Every structure is written in C-alpha cells, then in structure tokens.
Image (cartoon, rainbow, N blue to C red):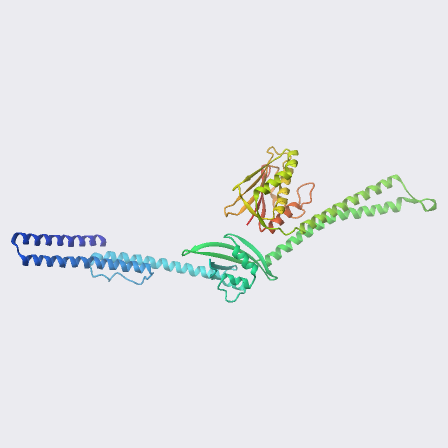
Length: 451
C-alpha cells in the first residue's frame, strides 16, 4: 500500500507539472501575457521542488534502512520517522518488521555461537583452529591442558612441545589423522578438517590423549598373546612330557642286562622307543617353527617410504605368481583407476602383503567356479588411495572375520596364522589399514587403505 501511494504521489505531481506548463504556454501564445507565464513557471518550479523533496526523503529513508542492515544497526525505528503523511505508514511498518526479523536472527546466531563456545570448552577433546598463515583462532581448555604451551598464538608454537608434532600437523591433509607419542604421559591422536570462513581458509585440529586407551588395548593384546603362547606351548610340551615319561618306563622295565654289562631291548620296545622319539622330534620342530613365526611377527623392519606407481607393483605380483597360479588354473587380473595411480610406501613390504593375500585367495578358490583373482587400485571419496585383492573362493564366516588378524589364529589346517597379522602390522607402519569383507561362497575383499 505504501509503495502504491508513493507511485500515486509521484504521478500526481508529474501530471500537475505538465498541466501547469501547458497552461502557461497556452496563455503566453494566446494572450502574450508575460506575468501569467511567469506565475505558471513559478508554479512549475515549486511543484518540481516538491517532487524532488518527496522522492529524496523516500530515498534517504531507504538508504538509512539499508545502512542499518549493512552495519547490523538494528536500533533504528521508522514508525515515527516520516513527514510524508499516512501514505508511508505501511512502508515504515515493513521496515520495522524486517529489522525485528534481523534482530531475532542475530540473537539466535549469538545464542548458538555462545552455546558452541561453551560446548567446545567443555568437551574432553582438544580443539584448535588456525588460518593458512598459522594464526590461532579457537583453542579450548582441553587443548591448552594437553599441550601445555604458554602464549599459544600461532600454530608454529607447537614446535615448543615437539618439532615432529609440528611437522606432522603442517603436512596433514584435510580429513587425515595420525598418532604420535610425545612422552611417557602423552600419546596424541590428531585429526584434521578444513573449512572456509569469510573467504579465508581455516584448519580445525582435534587432539586426544590415547595413552590410557593404548594401555588398555596393549594389556588386552598381551593377554590374548599369552593365551595363544600358552596354548601352543602346552600343545607341544604336554605330549613331549608324557612321551618322555613313557619312554623312561620302557627303558626301566623292558631293558634287560646280559653278561658283561650288555643291555638288551626287545624289538617291540625298540619300535615303541623309536616312535616316541620321532614324535618328540616333530613336536620340538613344531615348537621351534612357532617361535620363529613369533620372531618374524615382532621383528618387522621399518618401511622405507617413497612414492612409486601401483602399476609396477601389480606387474611384479603378476610375474612372481604367474607360474603358481597357472598350475592352479587361476587367472590374475589387474584394474587401475587412474592408470598413473601412485602410493607412498615401502614397495617391497607392500608386495609381501599382496603376495600373501593372493596366495590365500588361491587356496580359498580350490573348488570355486569363478577362478579369477582381481587386483584393484583406486582412490576413495576422500581422494585417498587404496588397493583391493578380490577372490571368489569359499569366503570367511562372520565369526572368524574379526579374528583372522589375531596372531597365530588360522582357519587352515596348515599354516602358522601369522601372515595376516604381519600384513596388518605392515599397514599400521604405513599409517594405513587392512580390512576384510566377505560373503561366504561368493567373494572376499581385502582392502589396503592409505592416508
């Protein structure tokens, strides 16, 4: 209504200016009356000034409204701020309603910001945000308590705690994570996220001290390992001890002494003795093999990290296993996307993982109709590279999926149960992971994911 009244007001003033101009022109042409013409010209001037004033006041009002929005000054009121009459009452009310809506929105945002700040300060995870130049934006109390860095104003101040930590943070990609042991009391797990605010790039870091969790997991791991060691040692030592006792009885009861100190043992006892000693020998060799497997698991070399093309890794696997797979009538296919995919890691150690996985797949496909193993390389949704080994063998039952990476656990009749445990350990050294999914009787997928 206010805007329609404004248009009407402008239209009426323009019409009056035109009419007065026409009347003045007519009088001058018909009568040559100069005073009347001057009078009409004066009227036109006054009407023009009135039109300019009318429009200017409205423009100033709109400009003041827009400036209030621009500078977030919502203290202005337009209800009694017009000398233009009742025609702009609705416009003033509209301005006030918009300002009130902005007030409410800003109040809600301030409340949400306050809630977010309180929440950030009370979480048990350290939070730090910093700009691309390193300037600290937000840092909560937990981060200050964990890092213990006075005057923490720049992300480079992390070097006061640990230069290795600073280097890891600066090289960390958005969405990435790493863990680092600072000292005996502080083992940090760090995660990163990136965002933009007011046209500036920011990085958000979260810190957690995982020392207690690691200790808990370490204790659980040692307990599980102790169970395995006890089981394997008892499996070997119990029959050895029993056989040794039985052999002692044979020697004591069945050995007879002849003349001149010669000892005699009948044939049956001799065979029992030979069989018992052979069994002891086999069990002893099995125990030595078990100890060697444990040594291999605990003596994995540190990876030599460098970038290399996945294509060459796949080609090496194909050449090394071609004869073995040919004998088993199994084909190995490779799939890469992109073709120039590269991985940063130790090619020799990763090759050892893939050889182990392909051989496991070959053994699982003894009765499979689809006799193809697929080596697949690509990047995930976070642009992180991965490698998959896919077979179509008998698969892994759900209850065994979580245990196949436990050292010395195996579902095969022969094998040490150490291969997958070593493979996952190698991936951990690469700050990656080794996971498995399986549909028994259809396919099994081992995924090597890299950060």
